[in-house]
Image (cartoon, rainbow, N blue to C red):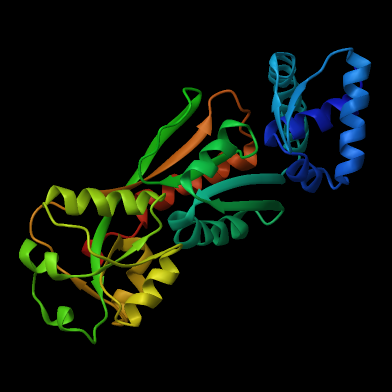
Length: 304
């Protein structure tokens, strides 16, 4: 069996996409298709079902993918073991994160990691929780930090790292900024700026209003917390967001936090990784630093 073909097959199988595999391998899509066809001819077996423009692993492909993952994990482990015969840590770490930790936490941790291990390359992929979970499950990422709650594959290990406070924010130039606290009746009158409906933050907002029997009153739905913050600056409404994402603006006075009586749900951040994936020494060092960050320096509402 040609290992070159096996490497190409593994990339296409992980992504179930010639487009994404061609970007990873830096091979044109037509060349990639030809080499997959040659590999199938060499084996005498079809490995993919082709439905229109989409491809899916068939039973043969699923069997081979399992073994190819094991083979390349062993190769990676051997490479890292040899690298670590040296006095310093080298290599590459592929880390993922959902939008909130990816934007507001991981850059801080990466900056500290680069100081400690300057010869390690970091690849950070930021996406929604479902996308990040899939990339961990198919082995594309060494590990990831996801926000909120998510249902994971049985082979994905989930370690909760921190419970972030959800805070109700408003522009300091609105009447809401003058309130010492709000009750449910006041909340009913407020228009909310929310994250897109397929996000974890929207699910937490929805749970929050439903637990208080407050009807949904959305002024605008946006695709990122940065966009939400700019909408709040523009006095479009109020929003329920993790404290970590607005700590700088709250401390500087650009945004105002409105106290909410009663229980407010916490927003968790979790470390996730595949139970069968080899975790390289550089990745282990990164995970150790993440645990250190969340234990000692993670933002909390009480630091205001």
